[in-house]
Image (cartoon, rainbow, N blue to C red):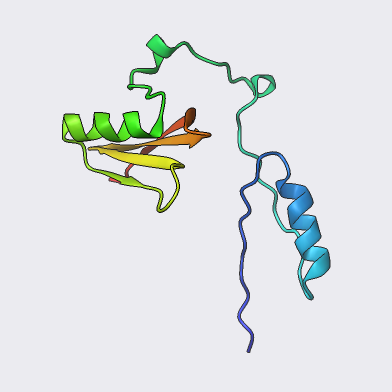
Length: 113
């Protein structure tokens, strides 16, 4: 028996097109449920000022690593490229994402109890 796989695609605005392409290309494939991530102002989200964030905002990958090291915060980083740094802050993880070595996005994830 061939096992069935569920694939999750994460793309910047093109995930549905990519999913349809793969479903048309791979035999016995189909696009199932589509779940859209929130994020646009039209969806009730708004940009916030740096002083509202409540977490340090590092301008570069190296600055984030230096800040974590200086504060004694354990962290993981993307292998090979200066793409992301994840810091362990007890009850949550802060994920700093960089593009062209400039801060692109900060996300916070809460650890399960």
